[in-house]
Length: 109
Image (cartoon, rainbow, N blue to C red; front, side, top):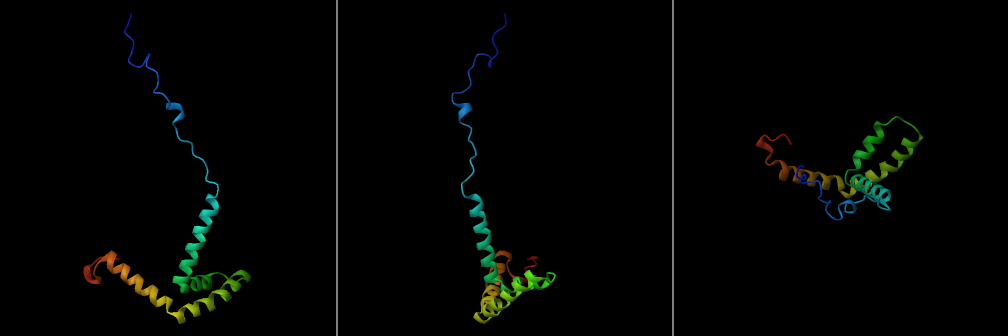
């Protein structure tokens, strides 16, 4: 008769089968994701208003594009009068200076 193998009579650790976490869907995950995306787009639109107008001008003409452009152009003009693009430009240059180093450092940023 052979001796029992080390795993033969050893019971599994207690609770092993019930300690596996079960992924449960969060009740409002889709709504939270949608809000996050729309708030991000709104902030980008406010900080970089020219990008929205430029993107709309590149789209093929149509009723939706025309309405969106008619809404975006006055917002862009108003934000330009407030100096938001200049603020964005200054923040962008500051970020590049911090993240890339000096402009003559040869860093391709």
